[in-house]
Image 1 (cartoon, protein in one colour):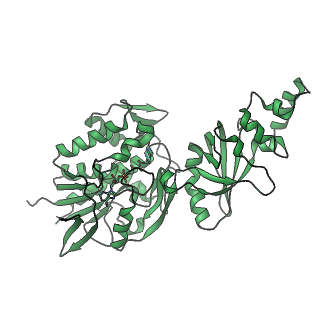
Image 2: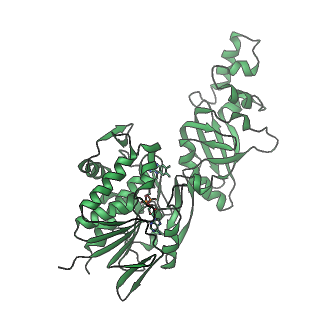
Image 3: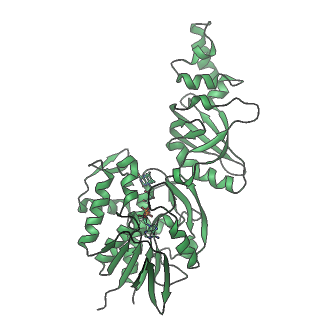
Length: 397
Ligand SMILES: Cc1cc2nc3c(=O)[nH]c(=O)nc-3n(C[C@H](O)[C@H](O)[C@H](O)COP(=O)(O)OP(=O)(O)OC[C@H]3O[C@@H](n4cnc5c(N)ncnc54)[C@H](O)[C@@H]3O)c2cc1C
């Protein structure tokens, strides 16, 4: 029996997984990576510790123009199967609040064991190999890289996005997909800090830079529902950051790009309701009536934040509903992922094969699916990589 030849572009989370699944299904696999080393972005994940999946998969954790597109793909390689797969490779999984990490505490161990597995399965990994062009000629897929042309029966684009400043994230996958006639939902920064300003007449917040505080951020987009996230807010000279802000950032960035007005409200004391707050402050004041507003908040908030709050016209409202105008996200280089990417309407929801070109597959962040913080982007990369790899290897020649 002729073995199918599968060429995969990009040795990141999705491409490496695709290579293992395709090789295991019997294909001859060549994996092209333009970096000198595979798996660079995996090594940077989770602050170098790699939050590789999560036990909770429900709710608004996958986003995109058609977030439901992710469901079919996740079903084929769900978190339990991902954990079992990595255990087999040697990763001892540990769970913290539902988030999975390798016990080694080293993201590099995930990348290295995946590469080990790919090589063990016979995958040919070519590094320093940038894919310049992809096309199909008389039923044969060709990938041009430098002076070489690789030939295959199927090609998987797993180039990732242009998010982060990690070497290799150059967005060239978008160009390859576009050149093949695929339509892109414009890629934009997601999981990123937000740049903000104050409403007219309100004082600057710049003095709070460096403060980290538990709180709630509510994003308000004209004509859309309010969205709130709680956790550690990081206050910066230019605006707001931290996980709760990251989780909402893709909505803000895309709404601003659509010309919509976006604002945010910060609640620095969500454990006390708006109604209870005046009485709560009055009780603190009653103990020593000589205290200034700044002294009243000492012990409750860090000094830098107190100064900013005390510039506001009304203290209680500043504490539970500090208003900001959202001007935009950070640069794509400062973002952890991109929203947008290859339009899912042009992909088979089961196999990830292109509806435009038989034998062409896509996987990972290149596709218009993005996840929240919590291991969801890697879960998408593993699941979509597995689906594309398996189907590319199995479909009849
Ligand atoms: C700092 C940081 C921390 C993160 N932490 C987490 C986390 O803890 N958990 C989580 O779930 N997600 C996390 N993410 C997101 C996650 O890393 C990505 O979503 C995931 O790696 C995407 O996988 P991918 O295979 O699609 O792309 P990538 O992993 O980026 O792989 C794409 C590969 O293709 C190569 N390539 C691109 N173009 C070409 C070309 N033309 N020719 C040859 N090679 C090419 C690139 O060099 C790269 O190696 C984090 C991201 C960042 C930046």
